[in-house]
Structures are given as C-alpha cells and as structure tokens.
Length: 328
Ligand code: COA
Figure 1 (cartoon, rainbow, N blue to C red):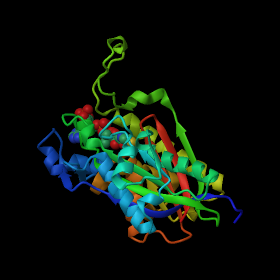
Figure 2 (cartoon, helix red, strand yellow; figure 1 turned 180 degrees about the vertical axis):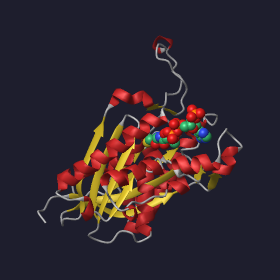
Figure 3 (cartoon, protein in one colour; figure 1 turned 30 degrees about the horizontal axis):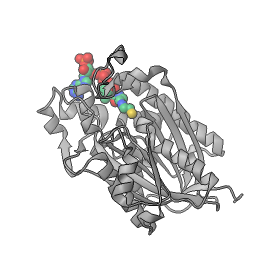
Figure 4 (tube, rainbow, N blue to C red; figure 1 turned 120 degrees about the vertical axis):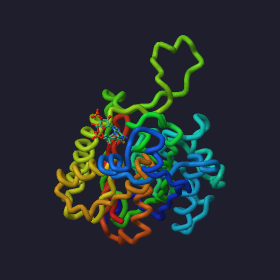
C-alpha cells in the first residue's frame, strides 16, 4: 500500500432495451440461419431499442443503477465520461444528454470515441483525472444503439450487433485496491477494415471522400485475426506491467464480439474457460457497452469478491485496443 491513487469501482449498472431479436427472426430478414449465426459467432439473441430507448436513455438507466449501488446521488457526480459511436445526436454529446436526464448539475460531461474500446479508454482517462484529484466521483459509461447504424440488408454485419449500456461509478483509492495496470493502443492504418461514414456533408468541396453511407462496414475475417492478436498482446502487456500471471487473475471480461475470438484467446493465453465471462449469446456485440454490461452482470452474480483481480480487454474500430487490471 504505497499511497498511489487507483481507480476504484463504487458501483456498477446496466440497462437494456426490452425488445429481444432472435436468430430465427433474422432468418426472415436476410439470407442467414440460426445455425450459422450460433456456430460462427455464439450469438443467439440481441436487444434492439425502440422509442424512449435511445443511447442517452440507456446510458442514464445504467448510470442510475451504478449510483444506487454506490449509495450516491446524481449531484455527487463530478465527471461523466461516455464511450459511444451511436449517440442519437452528433451535438451535443450524449454525455450532456445523460447529465440532463440524471440532473447531474455539478458534473462536466463529454463523449469519447474509441469504438468498441470506448469504455476501457474512458476508464483509463478517469484514472488520469483521479491521479490529479482522488476525491472525484466519475461516471464511466459505455452505451450504444448500433441497431441504428447497421445495414439491415447486409448479413455480414446485421446479425452481429445489439443495443445496451453499462456504467461504473469510480473514485480514487489509496489502499492498494482499484486499477493496478492499464494500457491503451491504437493503429489507424487499417481503419477501413471496420468503419462507418458520417452523415452526408453539406459542403460540395469536401465530396472527394467517397461516402458510402453511415452504417457499419467490415471485413470480418481480417478483423477477427487482428482482434485476437491485439487483445492477447494487450493482456500480456498489462500482466507484465503489474508483475502478475494469468493464474493470479480471478475473472477476465473480454469485449464480447464473437465466441470464437474468445476461444482463440483462451487457447493462446492458456487460461481455463471458467475464468472468462461470456454473455455474447444474449446480447451480441454491443460495442462500447459490452464490457461494462458484462461487468455489471458478473458483479451482481457475485463473481467478484473484494481483493479479486479482474482483467478486462477490448478491441474495436480504429483499430483501438487495450487491457486493464483492477483489484476489486
Ligand atoms: N449468414 C450466413 N452466411 C453468412 C453470413 C450470415 N449472416 N455472413 C457471412 N456469411 C457467409 C459468407 O458470405 C461466406 O460465404 P462464402 O464462403 O460463400 O463466401 C461464409 O459465410 C464465410 O464467411 P466468412 O466471412 O469467412 O465467415 P467467418 O467464419 O469469418 O465469420 C464473422 C464471419 C463476421 C462472424 C467473423 O469473421 C467475425 O466475427 N469477425 C470479427 C467481427 C467483429 O468482431 N467485429 C467487431 C470487432 S469489435
């Protein structure tokens, strides 16, 4: 206990749209099958937002639960950091909409775009703020409604994604618990393997850029390869950084993109499958929401006890990736 300030989780929360979309329903929408989706991705159902379930509302719902678990109120929040690529508005930030909905009048709020790595990036940024002022209470959220950003005619992508939000309320701790290692990475060179254009611009002078529509485009097979390699190397990096081995870790929460990505990681890291938290079967890939959603579920299931080591790793468009270790 060296007096260093670490990011400590006071409470977790999550929020999901009510509507469940099954693989069987997708069979009626594109040329696919329940069998193909389940065996190639591990996904069986995903949640799809309806009216009143926009990204900011899901995010606020998750934040309310995290506040409740922490025994605090919206007025206690100093900063709202929100990872998303699918806010219902381009301006203002989704985080400001969440601030309004919660009544978090003492906070400042902004979004962060690191695609599926958005939550871990936001947690890493919270850690930097807490090193400056350990008393801050920071609401870190990952929230998405990717159902609004997929091309529902494209079977390569529309079967993969889902909507949801997860949140963690964090503050500084100097007793050895909290975030003990974290490292984020990005590489923009291969951005077009997984990307989404903006809404069409109004300046004809800027029309050189070939805008192919504001929905997700992906070369799945290539993304798969990079995702496995990147997450494994990020995990190894933070283990080395903290002087730990994978045997010391109690629970691993990887970004939930594809069960086969998770299985490849299990093999390469030589870790027992029971140590890895998986809920992709229920929610599909919820991008920035996937890790905090899983974290909230694991927490509420009692999978984490004080002192346990939790390792989270993410990968997303950019490419962005990273890993974080927290002593619970
Ligand atoms: N239903 C049925 N068939 C489908 C299909 C679908 N929904 N989507 C693709 N296919 C077909 C392809 O057209 C291809 O057919 P072909 O062999 O006749 O050309 C065949 O299935 C195999 O396609 P392939 O892309 O090689 O499959 P895959 O085993 O790589 O699985 C993904 C595809 C997308 C599931 C997989 O590559 C993946 O998960 N990649 C990572 C995606 C990801 O995680 N993105 C987000 C990162 S944050």
